[in-house]
Image 1: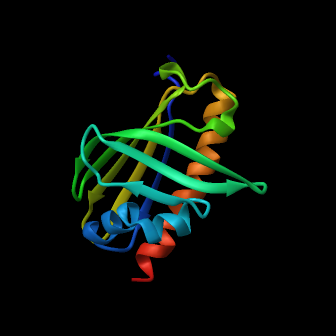
Image 2 (image 1 turned 45 degrees about the vertical axis):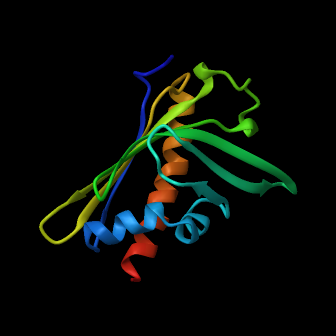
Length: 143
């Protein structure tokens, strides 16, 4: 595993912590900020999480396991995408850690993805997550 190669994206959101938490865990909002996917989970720690969608006209299902669910502060889950072309084996899963921190008049959202194989993969993931957390910000701030 490449645990030391972590892609991290953070953003300050002008909305309460509870609102940001709601956005990152609500299937309708997730569809909006996560490439049109349908989120399927019951948020049980140890239970499955899946994102179903279509990419370039082909259906896919990304999957993982919920590792921590601590409203409204922290969400941790694994993630594997068959679109990566890698085999569905444990060493090809990432762990995504969402941290939602209340600040004086805003909320800080940080998304970290571990197990990136090389610096190029870190850069690619960070660019994707930077865009995603910016979309979370837009959704949360519009109320």
